[in-house]
Length: 114
Image 1 (tube, helix red, strand yellow):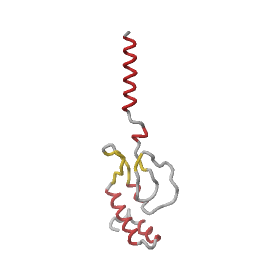
Image 2 (tube, rainbow, N blue to C red):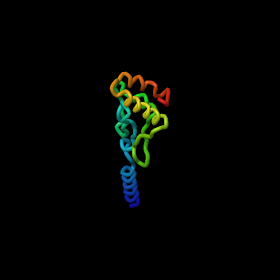
Image 3 (cartoon, one colour):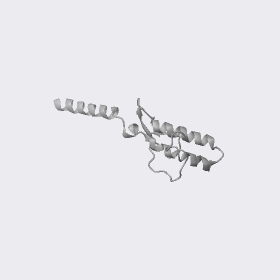
């Protein structure tokens, strides 16, 4: 008689643990896309990226995604914000000449004054 009670209790407890435990996919948080300044965070973390280079890729080394109040979001460092502002300034200043924009962007992590 006690055996049935204990076995039902363990099964119920096991089900509660499985139901309340978040899955690995729910708790995964990382950068989902590979290029540029429009960094998207979420559970579908990019594992393979092309070898192309987009304006702003150099800033991505300063970016990371993480959980904040249960939400996967971009956690911006001060270095990322400086790099982002520099690349945006280069993009605006050289909007008619992509070569000059890339040349300008290449100096963004070296000189924060752009």
